[in-house]
Length: 225
Ligand SMILES: [Fe+2]
Ligand SMILES: [Fe+2]
Image (cartoon, rainbow, N blue to C red; front, top):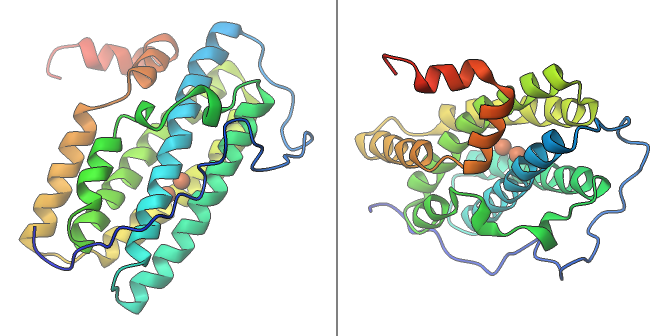
């Protein structure tokens, strides 16, 4: 791996003691929840994965910001880090309002891209940026599907939260793609990150899609996939 090495830091902004509240969420923030327990279990499973996706993204951004970077990258990544921090808190707040705390009830490794993040976080700045950019793009696709499902089952809490998050992720994806250098090593890193992430899709997402997104399931099983 060429380029400037990303320096490791000890920044672990959301590794609070288990059960310790990070935010004091406003109970009025979200409208009343949907009550189907099977749906809630599947969606909460996915939200907990997404919580760690947000946390690992902001940890990777923090490491990038501790390394030598062009000024325009620093501004962009700082803005993105603040957004991901807000997303992580908001996802955790919604989960806690539903009786689940991902800091206690789930693990970082439940985010199935954690190995990809770890590997790319040890490479060059450009390779780490390529990984984050591809993750933002894939997340945007997955969060669009989450919104479709939340609409279909009438889950206003998830709809409200993911409308906000999706708009940010699309901005992050576009902004990162715009600054990534158009050289063969970066193109290869993007392809590699994308392929690895697509192959390690979370079983929790698969369970949610299988139960609530018949179109998606038919496409996976149908001919010409
Ligand atoms: Fe995010
Ligand atoms: Fe993002």
